[in-house]
Image (cartoon, rainbow, N blue to C red; front, side):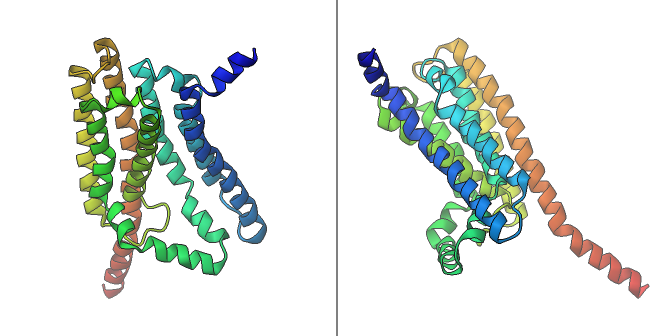
Length: 269
């Protein structure tokens, strides 16, 4: 019994799952503490923001630890479910939780200023550029599925962990580069963001069709077809949500100017 437990705890798959799960568990803990602090010291933090953060964290956790994560090692369809949860839906929901806004609210003023200064660094400006974010996100997926990297990921635990971390971080950076939730001193124009978003969506759709027609190394054709279809339709749903949010923010940003203009015209008449 002890030997079985020992083998289970030191199984590379189990170790990788706990390594990947730890940042999300820590994120839930820190976010909850920040909410409690904010509610006591400042205005009450929106409950909906907390819900989005928790739901996004759960989606990401389901993708990296538990039955689905274990099945993803041998089933490409399960892997693709995890990809959608970890690289698309999880980052979107967690971005809607506005974690940076919450952190800036709860930090002491001098630390908040340091964090703001850090956000203005050129490196972060480059990474948060929509084109760079899209290349990191969609470009990374093309490299993963069109090379032998996908097969290698299941042979080397470190590579498995690094790729999953990249999938989440690239998805989060891409999402936050497109929609305005947290403060971003390097925010690009709406036209620029929408152009990049539509192009990235097209590249994601084309990749899903490639996977359907030309399975990644080590993946059965039947699994590739199911996984490719899930990537195509599931990715469209999440991308549609991002487009909807971006269009709504664009409309709200432009509406006051029109109202003011109309008001001035009415007064002049």
